[in-house]
Amino acid sequence: MNALGVTLEQVWAWLGEVADPEIPVISVVDLGIVRGVAFEGDACVVTITPTYSGCPAMQVIADSVKEALQAHGLEQVRIVSQLAPAWTTDWMSEAGKAALKGYGIAPPVQQAIDISGLHAGIRSRAAPQVSCPNCGSAHTQLTSEFGSTPCKALYKCLDCREPFDYFKCH
Image (cartoon, rainbow, N blue to C red; front, side):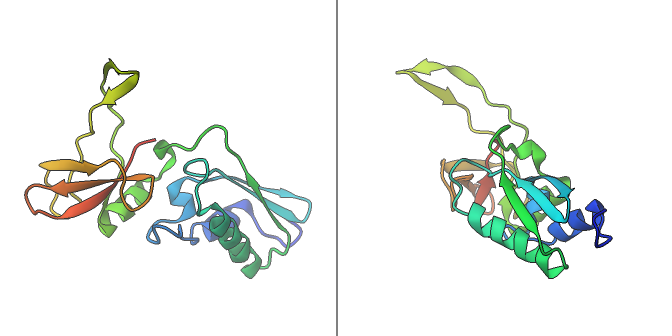
C-alpha cells in the first residue's frame, strides 16, 4: 500500500482495464506483458515486457498504463521495460485467450513444433493445428506466416471459408 492507501491489487485491477492498442478486446494484463507492479516511495513502478523486441505498440502501451494510473490518482508512475526473460504466449491468461477467440483471432495453441531437420541451414517447422475461431472447425490451413501484425499468422478455414488471424506461439 502506498501513502494514498492504494494497494497493489487495486493497481493490478486498474491495469486490467488498459486495452492492448492492436487488439482492443484483450487487456495488457491478460496479454501478459505487465510483469510486475511495485511501490517505491510515492511512485508506482510498472514493469512491462514487449511481445517481441521492437514492438511498435510499446510506447502507446506505456503511455496508456501511465495515463490510466494517473487517472486513479497515482501521480508518480514509472514504466520499466524488461526484455529478459522474453515474453511468451504462456503468460497470456485464459480470459485473454477467450477474448481473442471471441474477437475472431485464434488463440495460441500448445507449441508442438516438429523440427524436422535443417534444409539449406533453415529449420523447417510444421504449422500447428489451429481451430477456426468462427466455426470451430479444425479443418484449417496456414495461408501466410504473417498476419495483420508480426505476432499473428494468417489462416483460412476450409469449412466456413473464412480467413482469420492466429496468435502465434512464442
